[in-house]
Structures are given as C-alpha cells and as structure tokens.
Length: 148
Image (cartoon, rainbow, N blue to C red; front, side, top):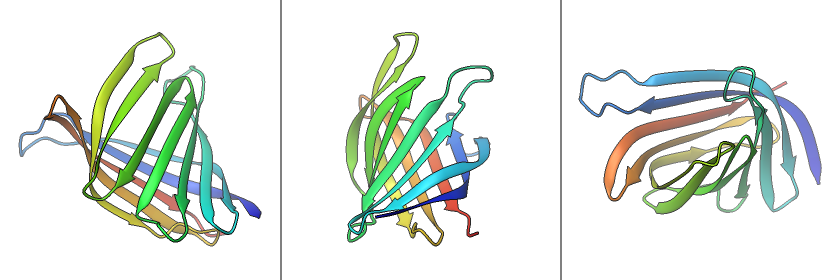
C-alpha cells in the first residue's frame, strides 16, 4: 500500500434553472488530499469547508483499479452522504446536514471519465439530481490530481 499527499483541484458546476440560457453556479477549490493505492483500490480523501466559518466535511472517493468507471463517494462531518456514480446508472442518495435536515434524491450519472492514480489524473462526472423522477439540477464534478 502506498499513500501520497498531493494537491487536488476541484471544479463543481450546478445548474438549477434548466432553461437553455441558465448559467451554472461554479465552485473551484484547491486543497491537499491523501491518495492511496492498495493494489486493488484507489482512494482519494480530502476535507472541504462548505460554509464559511462552518465545520468541515471529509470526502472519500473510492474505486477499484480494474473498474474505474464505478466510483463511490462518502462524506462525513458537517454533511453526511454516501452515493455511487456509474455511467448510465441511477442511485438513491440521502444528504444529511448537521441541522437535522435530510434530503432524499437520485443521482443519475450521464458521463464518467476516470484516470486518477498516484501519478495524477482526473475524475469527471456529469450527473443529474432527480426528485420523484423530475430533474432538479444538472451537475458536473471535476477533480484533478495535480502532479508534483
């Protein structure tokens, strides 16, 4: 098993207004992450501060090296959530916030590209969030592991 502390860049885009003219809300973050290769799985772990002055959320991405097109995300801390991404698949998800509010929805992965390794790479996931079968947002999550 090998773990490296590496810099990552994250660009998250969310479009709630589904009209053709809508501009997405964009968030860009750079931070340090632990990237681990245990021979079978790659794990990327990092902390996020989702609200200014608030607590942190620890995010863990996991995928099997022989199945890079199926990625799990687990968040703990201020926000708690577990979900999976696989192109063309729909997964139920519960997003729990520290104030006791929990949102139940489906994540529908439209595209997934994953080249993440200890040496760098990127993960791009384009997905929709659905509630009761209705698309409420279109999203893109782009994580880049920066080479040293």
